[in-house]
Image 1 (cartoon, rainbow, N blue to C red):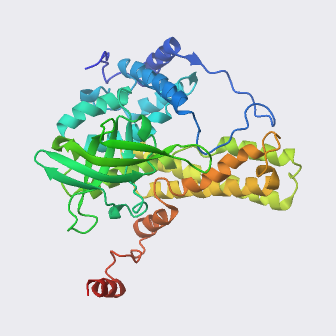
Image 2: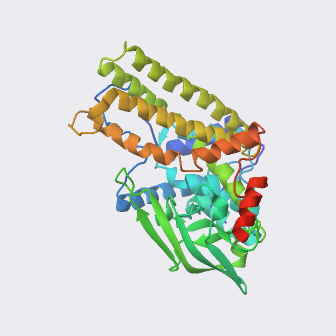
Image 3: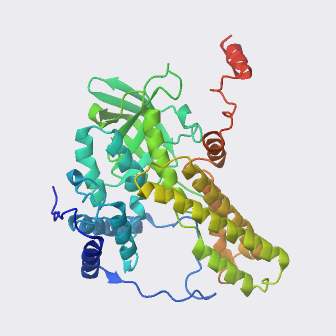
Length: 425
């Protein structure tokens, strides 16, 4: 399939680590040991999202894809994956060992693959036809193809099952028409995972079907969405009678809700396992000292609250990721991780606003002040991406705490039956 050097699975972890280090030494440069953070030195950018010029972004993506190809061809692109798709079928401990090694080297930004490899590829591997698996999975892990996720719609964000994008069967193809919104990376992606409504007469959770779509098709229109931060990290996507072959369907017809759940649990795993904000916490501590607030009791209490919650979230994330690395599936604990992450971002944002006040509103050119505004105006996005805070609380309440299902349009309470009956009348 590719210039992949077959290696026996019986290789010891020490031998594997030596191979990985030799590869990295040959293909990349080691990082210079980072110096201790000093207030006023280096960049003071602290935004939630990395705002890039789209031409620069494409050049950055090209370098990232080239690096993935090198890793894959050397046998380090999908270490725990099946050999049929270019993997090595080694234990997850081997992947962790290589990731740790790679972190010591200067390599191109790999965030472009977070959605494709963390959410879309696992869904294809579970639900796609054999032909689709063979066509896409290995290419995604090699960096030949970048994937995106197209779920949310203007009228169906947190309530995903209310989506209205439709897919109608026409012989051996499906014709997809509708709009998606808040799609990260749509503008540089090659394929996308779409959930569409295939039977409007079934209950809303049961009339959905998943598909793999070609993002380069002329029937796909992509428009950037400008954010409060000034950047455009997200897009709205329009499907204008996009024709998709049936072998690009994910799972059975009208079983798209289970397909979506596979993706969403992996999505929350990826979001929840993100950085715990340790670097920003260090910066916030030094900011407190710089402005002479180290002994202010209110400021100290707020800072301690931020630090404690980040530490607790880190422990919970580690527990959840250990379960996944041991072969378990992402579960409702990822909703806890995701919710904790957004709440901690809000805590940090509130703390910074408390310390800086007007310095964060007006750009005086002072280092480490106005730059924090990027974090503050970007923080609300974290409460929406990957499922809103309200949805996460419902999942935790129902699936972790065992509380009754939240009253909604699908609930079977007498109140809702009365409302439905009244509407039908």
